Amino acid sequence: MIYLGIDDTDIVGSPGTNQLARTIVGRLGHLARGAIVCRHQLFVDPRVPFTSGNGSASIQLPHGEDIPRQELIASVRDEMRAFFVEGSDPGLAVAARASDEMVAFASRAQSEVVTQADARAAAARAECHLEGLGGTNHGIIGALAAIALAAGGDHGRVVHLEEWPWPDQFSGVQLVAAIRERGIADIRTANGEAFAGNEIDVGKHLRPNWRGGRVVLFVEPPEKPGSPWRAQKLD
Image: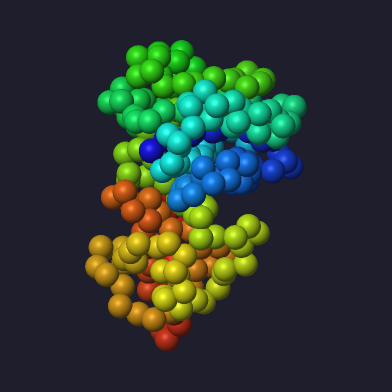
């Protein structure tokens, strides 16, 4: 498994980081089979610059070791540079695992202001590739945090799986069988019980979560009796 982390790749009015992640998956082709793209929520605070919501993205590549690491990095770097918009501050992180220090850094990035120096120090000690690709390079913070959060297996909103087309028209009320066909490993209620219904309103987009190293959709009861259960919007 290889983990990619990207962040701070957009400005207001430009395509976002999630779209870039999907573009990278498309560029990698066969190498990206089985890829999982997640959005990770980081600390929202006036002292932290971000475009909207302060989310970074991770890409899990189960077959990322099939080519030399530097070749993989070069391919992703080229795509990010082609995507670059003036005013953004993109960062890229690449690693096969997350060290304890990286995990601690990611936890801090969710609840307090962290610095580029903090990110570079944690990455260097873990031998994790980390680089800025423009502007202030501030995106290295979210990129490193994204790797650690994805590798931990218990954080992130899944925004793309191999089974999903793009653009994706899968929305509204859907049969559970159709949802499972899209790579959803488990469907659970908020208290952890297995969902036993036949239909779920997934909303505008299907957005399960990365929990326990699996793709899990959490659901909640409808506001109106008799309506289908609804997908929960969780980070």
